[in-house]
View 1 (tube, rainbow, N blue to C red):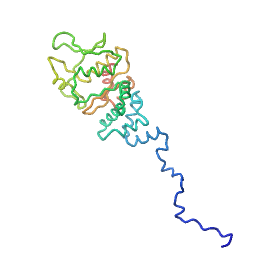
View 2 (view 1 turned 180 degrees about the horizontal axis):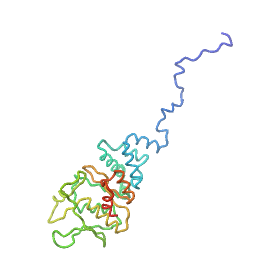
View 3 (view 1 turned 180 degrees about the vertical axis):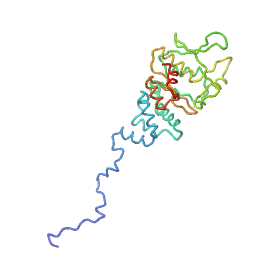
Length: 262
């Protein structure tokens, strides 16, 4: 062979094999190569529907669920199962506020946002509900349900220190399908004469007491399913934005203002 003769070209098989340590094509870039927060958000966006991502953004814009992003959003997205849109949104909230079983973090989150969830199949008395509501409104101190007067039909009030507000009976002949009424539950525990109240009636009274204690954030009703009634606290401006976005049970501003006691 002449000294000027070129060596044989490599075979096509040799050309097609990647060399060790070669960089994969950009189209195959792994999520793990992204910054951690961006990678987690990207994965979460694949697990959640667009309206669920919008719901999360709406909550954060309203000043609640502030840690529901990055790795925490991904954890929550992997924790919820199938269901209708509203049920999945409530599952998402419960997963976030459950804090993966960390009691300290769970308590901190629930108190910061004043999350209150009542399940339809949980036997409960009005007195027990008052205790639970008072636990997310520590500014009120001790909250008690009292009757003004000695007669059996005397009105009930919710009292916090020197302030009190009448408890209205929200019972109607025809209830909305997503409203949980405690009348039947209370009836089973009825001893003597007891005025019946709903969760919404108690929440409204707590909001009025918060107003009288100078607290601007109030409880509003998030869209609920047949099994759970959900409340969370925010300001009046942010509550109106949530209502306009369709995330609240109340469809008009007047109802939001009435429940919040603004």
